[in-house]
Amino acid sequence: MQVLHHSYRGLGLIMELNWDLILYLATIAIALGLGAWMVSLV
Image 1: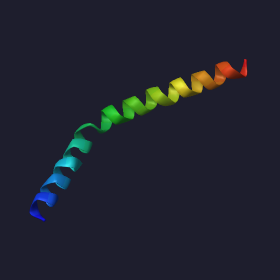
Image 2: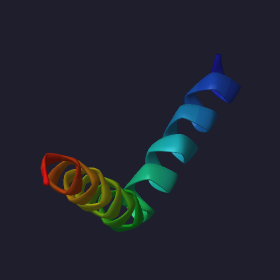
Image 3: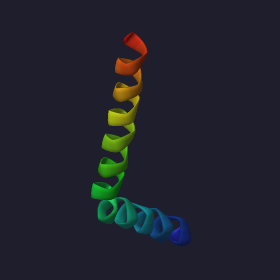
């Protein structure tokens, strides 16, 4: 149980440190998707 607690806390730390990277990648993916959608309308 203690190992599970430590690994969960470690995962939370990784998510906290990489939150800006995840947001950056999501923004790029959304922008590419919207660009492709706009091109398909033409």
